Length: 164
Image (cartoon, one colour):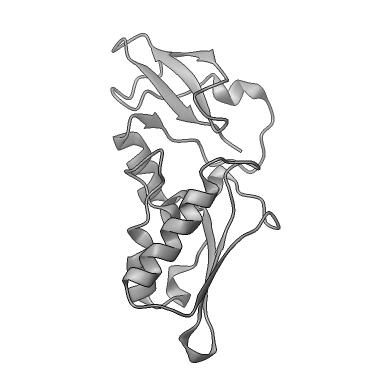
């Protein structure tokens, strides 16, 4: 996860504008996909990104979006790399990111030290009404990183970002 205290705020503002293509309420920074930002000699910008899942079909699009945003803001000497060296986890999602997921109708994942049991998918709070009276419909959502749930209180179907 990027430590905002070590990066030029202008770069962070630029990267905050780069949104997830499937969840446009959350930035790649807040999703934790951008794992490192370094400013080198001669102001070269280096951005490291890690996909939420290996083989994420949106990764190339996200990388191009970061490159385009840097270019649009006057940076010409930059490098954006996709790395699998440090695996992404849902613990990388910032508090602002969890709020953005909820605004999009996705239940944010809990912060976990480790996943002990698949039951973690069963006990999910509804992002619409905050009820715990929910049920896992299927662990297989529209993408590999989401599961499908139903809230018996407000009668809404919703997705959860799977804890990883």
